[in-house]
Length: 298
Image (cartoon, rainbow, N blue to C red; front, side, top):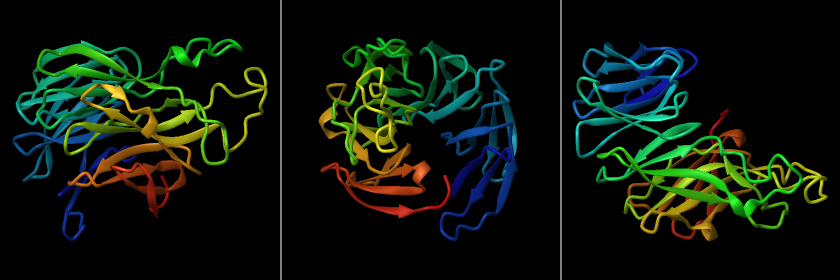
């Protein structure tokens, strides 16, 4: 089965993975944002505006349990640990990461992670969690005419899900590329979920890249459609826990890379280019786009 959240109709679509028939559409809470399957097979649907989690039974295809989270906490991302019966849930409004029991939903731990988190990913062993900060913090000098790009960047947090302690912050640096029709400078922003390669050694973070260093006040060049916002995928070295900046992918003629996934062998990377209505198929090792697939709106 496929489980698909419908954020505008407050429902969960259940799709047959072979025929693509839809045997059911289950009403859940307000503004569902993500879904994950618990070890017991139940689907947990995170409802952002309702601040709840709807637990759906896979047999009856109905909500059998509703977990209430703190008011206005805006839960967003969720993932289950492959090693223990535990869910990790990002509270975008509260700036926190929750650990919940995978059966009862009881809170097992909480970590304050700061403003604007949205997505959480877990490695295959359940040993490290990666929380991407959706909105990049204000950059040094951003409120002035003298931007200092070497002093900041976008953020991915490395967390031990067992101790619920922050271990490190990986910085996605400002691009130093020369502005041109097929590339550009800027800082990553609107970070999607970290997509971890099957070997667990590398990962990709899809996002857009904002050219905040360009403009009459800062570098004397007017903003244009080529060099205001670009879609990018940033590569992480998960062994050394740094960005592999040299292998950042610039998705030309696109404004936002919103999600990414590897094939099961780690040969291909698929990147959703939301605003250009395409999926880019990328050589995961070479880091070059092979072609794109038209997919329809958003």
